Length: 168
Image (cartoon, rainbow, N blue to C red; front, side, top):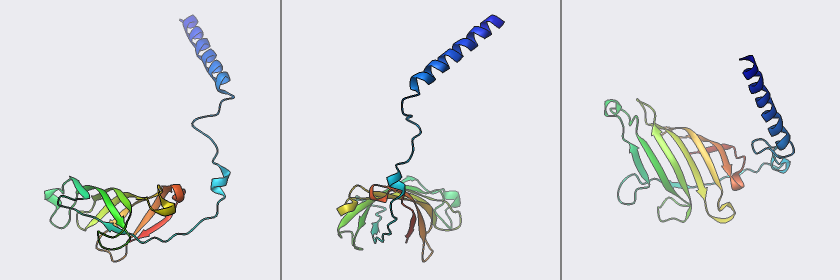
């Protein structure tokens, strides 16, 4: 039995040594340093105004219920309601205003007593220098509050390493 354990240990050690030696000069696919040019760029501040066109019913709905609210809890809220969205972002309040992007994601009603939603959404832009760039938000959105702020959790393209807030 001791001989089998010794042989097994030798084989494992040999395999480990061979694979380590074979990959020593190859770059790691899991860990690499961040491009210094990306971290040393000057921060830019941007202010955008979009109109979020949420159509919750009808033939042209852009917000589709995936899970309806739970009847036991929906006396004062829509607790449990989950909707997936693909809403237009326009430059004006009318739905026919110029389309500059889409708000894609979902929201979930998370309160049994108030109208508030957990919102996870990405604003995908396709206009001008921001074409192909997107910015992502994740937050509790208390609908009845006069001013609401949703934190920016990141972005891609022109919004790489983005941080900030979205005021509603």
